[in-house]
Image 1 (cartoon, one colour):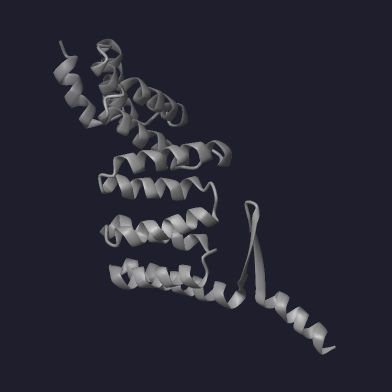
Image 2 (image 1 turned 180 degrees about the vertical axis):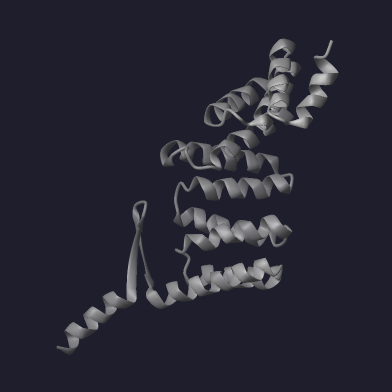
Length: 222
């Protein structure tokens, strides 16, 4: 009887997660601790106590690395203060190893690399995010930004044809993206396709994007 109770208690105190081809175990106590740490970190972020928030989020991942919400909050925190760059990337990479083919986590790594002018690494992360979104589903609201930001890298690298391909796909996902229209217009202009460039800028202007109006007035008005 005692043995039966112990087995029953084990299943009560532990939960299993199947992620990809791997199975992970975590106790309910650890999961609850991670949730509480993350909840408190969110409160710290709201109060702009970013140092405390980072410590709690790091501890949450240490206690329970399977609680995906914490990784999202780690990036949220970084986007607000840009501190602890190496540590944040290390933590996100840990999440990527656990949540395999998680396009959102790859995108966030790409954003950190972009903000720190590590363009080749950002390009890799955006490309992996795009690859995995094909499987995970492209209806997620961030997916157009995968294409926008990779397209912008192509544009800055003077790979205009590749940039246009990314902007074209983005505009299929979100026809109202004025950033894609404006930047595709720049790529067309650089390729000498002025009519297409002006059409894009004109459309962006009509959608209320003032930056596109600067290009239109300069290159298309006459």
